[in-house]
Image (tube, rainbow, N blue to C red):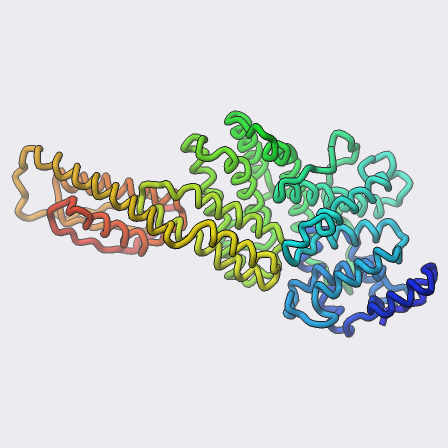
Length: 519
């Protein structure tokens, strides 16, 4: 039970209503500890708007507890990632914490502007269903927290001089968190932005702005440098993308030159990121994976509005980015970290899915099969996310409605038909060529596909062998474009393509031989 006497400034009737709504009732201490630990482990590095040491000091002092509004807002976000998740009941469900926090805000319970800004920003992360995208949902909280911050002058460095250094650093982090939230919401939902950096005089963040001191008794702190680097680079990413929402929502899409320039800026930014922020599946870390996913989602977002008019290079960049998003999400799932991801990964998955969908006009059965597998993987990952973020359920339904199994069957049939026609044309041309004397005892040859562990052994020779080499390499180029095709899938389709129309009238012995990687 939270001390209700801290609400003495409220009207007695209002205080009684709050008591009846149970806003002063908290979970048991062990559950509260779990929620606080979850928040500072998984949420705070992404939204670093709370001074951890100061909060823990108040949290452990019953005579001077932290803001009740802030506590319920933190529990609203953290409860999604706990074992009870979005299916929690009673005081443990995100909706229960959200309703209590909203009741406290509506009653004017909190008077300190800093907890007010922190709480409204966190409440803007609440996303239960489609109704939370309305004017009373995340847009409302996002605009409200920005308005509160601007009223306090957080966007003006000259207004910060009256605060202590530690408070200045906290307020700077709050402001940049609001900026990234404003840009992310605008880009995802096609809304106008509310922060114009031309009106701001605040400095960029540095590692020193995340220093809170070291307390050995604090068991909630993690890798401070990694957390700080992630958020600094995440802000830098959205500063590059600051013009994207207005470009995407305008009647005239970005020109090819603008897209190329923005893509170059993004590439330069990612290459300049500290090595700690570079993600690889073999060396997986949570925050670098989120930054990598955000980078590739940005690539998709600048290319998609102009497809399919863009060049083949741009289309391949978009396809590559979409495939990398799938790889990141699959790796997060394999490390059992998908439940801790923020809502923006749903947007990333959606961008990736659409990037695959626009490539369904391809003439390659191999690429079409890969696209189908990747799109199905995204559907399965979104279903996993729906247990944490229920909004993922209608997203899955939308995507399944947009692309049915019949659609895949149709495009695959068309691609196979085209390939059959090409194969038949190849037979006619081959019949017109002069016959070559066959070699009685063919020498086995090996085809080592580039950047692959696959070796194809072809028991043929001469001109026919070179034709097979050429076709296999072309097929593997398509495989490389898709990135996620396994050796098994590649061989299955390679053999199927050989069978179509009997392109080569000879017996081939194909075998997959594992060899040391040449990477």
